Length: 84
Image 1 (tube, rainbow, N blue to C red):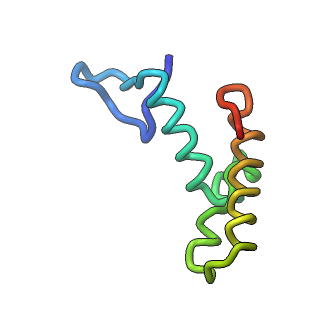
Image 2: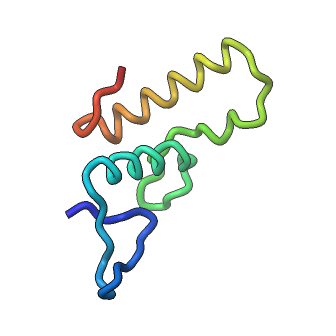
């Protein structure tokens, strides 16, 4: 069962679910938009992408973002998606 994120109820009052493609997208969004340390029970979860949001744009910053995204996706979602 793929639980919808953020947590929601469906029309019958039960836990809402997502189809597989939507669930993968929701999981990727969780990893990308969570700052490491934000979740007390998983302090290493996330990729820290928000920290780069207002930094000056440069090739080094783009490579850093790419490295953070690929590393976090491989660590947390490696079994579910291919990181290219």
